[in-house]
Amino acid sequence: MKTIVITGASSGIGKATAKYFANQGWQVAATMRNPAQETELTALKNVKLFQLDVTDSQSIAKAYEAIRMEYRTVDVLLNNAGYALFGPLELSTEDQIRRAYDTLLLGTTLVTRQFIPMLRENGGGSIISLSSVGGVLTLPLTPTYHAAKFAVEGLMEGLSYELYPFNIACKLIEPGGVQTDFWGRSLDMTKGVVDSPYGQNAANYLAQMTVPASENRVQSEMVAQVIYQAATDGKRKWRYTVAAADFIKYRRSMSDEEWIDTMMKNYMGEGQSTNKQ
Ligand SMILES: NC(=O)c1ccc[n+]([C@@H]2O[C@H](COP(=O)([O-])OP(=O)(O)OC[C@H]3O[C@@H](n4cnc5c(N)ncnc54)[C@H](OP(=O)(O)O)[C@@H]3O)[C@@H](O)[C@H]2O)c1
Image (tube, rainbow, N blue to C red; front, side):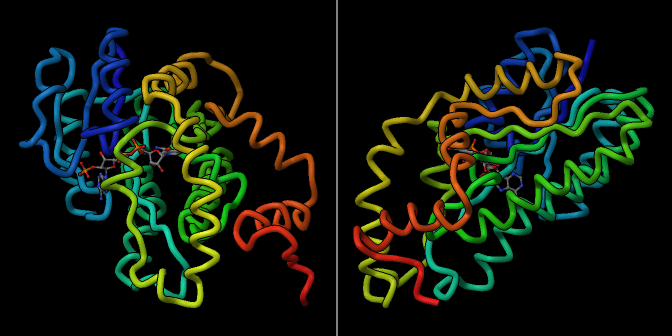
């Protein structure tokens, strides 16, 4: 029986993936910050819960030991836990910025480092990390999210060299909008935007983007299926997009400057240009 370890399995893509792999007959180590609150996954016989906060090294080490005791080796690590900060950097608090990087980047890095031995001793496997369409292209007002997801892309690609000899593949999942709690509890907003010098442009942007973006979200089960494909296809393929291929193609059809100008029209309104400097 194969084994997957998932971070942030209490909701959204993490939970859907835990259920999907369990239904395919895998053993699932579903890790989360508060396992005592979980009721749905506890009903599945090949799913076990472990406490793991990706921002807490002690919790990572403890979860690793418990999972090692339970399963001895692991086939797939899924770095899924996430947090996003929306708003101008100038109005972001240090706590919000640290939380974004600690959860998305440092958490992914430390969890990955911790689980490499179990994958090596397994004779190979995959480290699959949730990036995003936001790890490939940028949108206004989420600079720390893009910074972290671009870095996760670099981490996985850079790591692939040293793990290739051990038959461990490093793969990235790049979803567009997915219908999860991410847009509620995992999305933090900077305070005071409305009355700030950023207020008008932020309002323009939200008016342009929010409705079409929310209408186009796909279900988390679709992402779980693609994660399963990435874990099992045996292909030398690093990046898997989900409901984002057209958006990424559109981005790649233009220069960096043309992309920024296109986005600026949404942010600042028609007739605005970035060619001021
Ligand atoms: N939804 C989208 O449109 C979308 C698009 C592209 C990429 N993604 C990526 O997909 C991943 C999963 O997001 P989602 O959409 O499934 O959102 P979600 O339902 O809000 O899930 C986020 C998960 O991360 C967990 N988490 C947050 N901080 C954590 C920490 N310090 N330690 C451990 N777990 C932590 C949350 O656990 P708690 O229950 O403890 O809060 C929750 O289970 C994220 O990496 C996100 O960037 C999402």
